Amino acid sequence: MSDTFHFYEPRLGHGLAHDPFNAIVGPRPIGWISTRSKAGVDNLAPYSFFNAFNYTPPIVGFASVGHKDSLRNIEETGEFVWNLVTRPLAEAMNQTSANLPPEVSEFELAGLTPEDARLVAVSRVKESPVSFECKRTQILQLQTAAGDSVPTWLVLGEVIAVHLDRRLLKDGVYDTAAAEHVLRAGGPADYFTVGVEQLFRMTRPG
Ligand SMILES: Cc1cc2nc3c(=O)[nH]c(=O)nc-3n(C[C@H](O)[C@H](O)[C@H](O)COP(=O)(O)O)c2cc1C
Image (cartoon, rainbow, N blue to C red):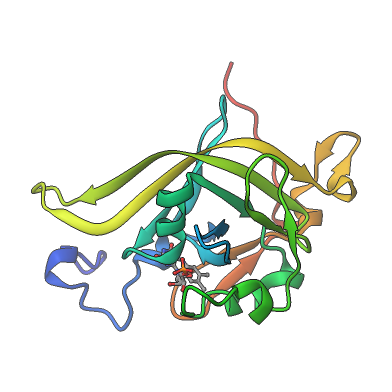
C-alpha cells in the first residue's frame, strides 16, 4: 500500500466514487459520426473513443462499445462522415446520443441540417464548420490481454475529402482556438473547450 498513489487493477474494480479512466484519458476529441443506413435513413451519433491515427493517408477511428447503428451502417455501406463538434453545437451533439430506433434520424431530433457529402453517400452536418468524408479501411473487434473477444469494435476510415469553413483559416493556417472545439472529459457530464489561453508552443528537438 502506498499513501501517495491509489493503485488498482481495473478488472478487480477501481475502488473510487467514479471510474477515473475517462477523466484521465481526456479531454478527448469527439467523433461526431454520420452514416446512412441501407434503407436510406441518416444516422448521427457522438463517439469520444475517437482519434486520428495517420497523416498520409489521413486515417481516423472510433470505437463502438456494443454493436451500434453507426457501426452497422458502416459495415453495410463502407462509408461515414466525421463532423467537428464546436461549442455552439454541443447541446445538439448531446441530443444525437439518444438511443433512437434505426428508422428515426438524429438530425431531425437535434434540429440539424443534413447536407449531401460529395464523395460518399452520407449526409454531413451542415452547421458543423469541418467535416471529413471517410471510407472504411478496417473494423477490428477488440480483445482482452488474454485473447478473449470484447463486444467493442474499432472502426477505422481513410479521410478522402475535407470540408473546412474558410472562416477558420487565418493566412492558410487552421485556427483551433477560433473553432471552439468541444472535448469530452470524465464523469457523466464534463466537457472542455479550448481557447487561445491554453495555447503554448514547443518545437521538436532537431
Ligand atoms: C459525448 C459522448 C461520447 C460518446 N462516446 C461513445 C463512444 O466512444 N463509444 C460508444 O459506443 N458510445 C459513445 N457514446 C454513446 C453513443 O453516442 C450512443 O450510444 C448513441 O446512441 C449511438 O448511436 P448509434 O446507435 O446511432 O450509432 C457517447 C455519447 C456521448 C454523449
